[in-house]
Picture 1 (cartoon, rainbow, N blue to C red):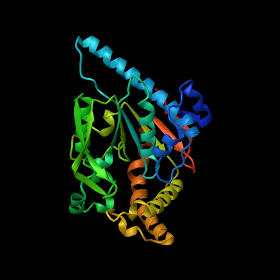
Picture 2 (picture 1 turned 180 degrees about the horizontal axis):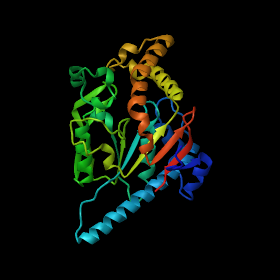
Picture 3 (picture 1 turned 135 degrees about the vertical axis):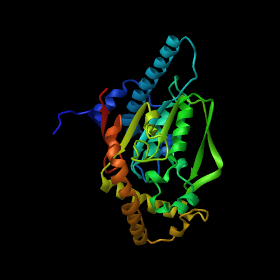
Length: 311
C-alpha cells in the first residue's frame, strides 16, 4: 500500500475551530429556505462546517485575485476581470444543490467577492427530444447525456472575462431544458459549478479531448456518502416529491402522484439501482480523489469529516 496520503483529515470539531472569528451571517430562517428536500441542516451545522469552508474559499479567492493583479503588473496592462470558479461534485441525492446555495449565501457576504452565481450542469443536459432520438432517456445523468462541449464553451467564456455569458435553463418540474429561458451571468466574482459530472474525464468525446470541465476550476469539492445512505435519501426524497411537486399536473412525474408508499419505494429503488447507482459506480465515485476538498456525510446528512488536499 502506498504511503502517499494526499489529504489532511479533520473531524468536524477540529474543522470548526478553523472559522476563527468569522461571524455567522445567516439566520435560522434563511438556512431553512436554503436547505433541500429531506435534508437536515441547522445553524450549528452551517457554523461548524460551511463557515470555515467559506473562510478557506475566501482566502483562495483573494490569493487568486492578487495573482491576477500581479500578472497584470508584469504584463503592463489591465486585463478583464475573471471569476473564481468552484466545482461541486457528488452523487444524486447527496445534497450538492443545498451546499451550493449555502456557499453562495456565505461567500456573497465577503467584501472582495459579493457577486456569487450558481451554474448547474443540469442545464447542459440534451433536451428530452434529443435524448429520445439517441436512445438515452434511461441514461439521463450519464456523461453521454450532457452537451459537454457547450458547458466547456460557457466556462471558457467566463474565464475569458466576457461581460455577459448566457447558459441554458433546466426545469425539474418539466424534466427538460426550457427552450425559451436562459441564465444570464454578468461579471461574477465567484461561480459555483454544481453537478454530478463536473470532475469526470470522459474516455471519448466529441470535443477537444485535451480540455475538461475541471480545467476551469480554481478549487473543487466532492460531497461523499456511503451508498446505503444515498439510496435511503433518494427514496425518501422521491416520496416527499410524490406528496409535493409531483402533485402539480404540469409535472413530468405527475404519474407518480398517487402511488402508495410500497409502490413509491419499489419504483424509487428501481430508478436508484438501474440508473443512479450504476452512474455513481461507473462515472462519479472514482472522481472523488480528484477533488481538492472532500466533505464526508454521515447517515443524518450532517458532515462528519473533511479532507483537504495538501498543496
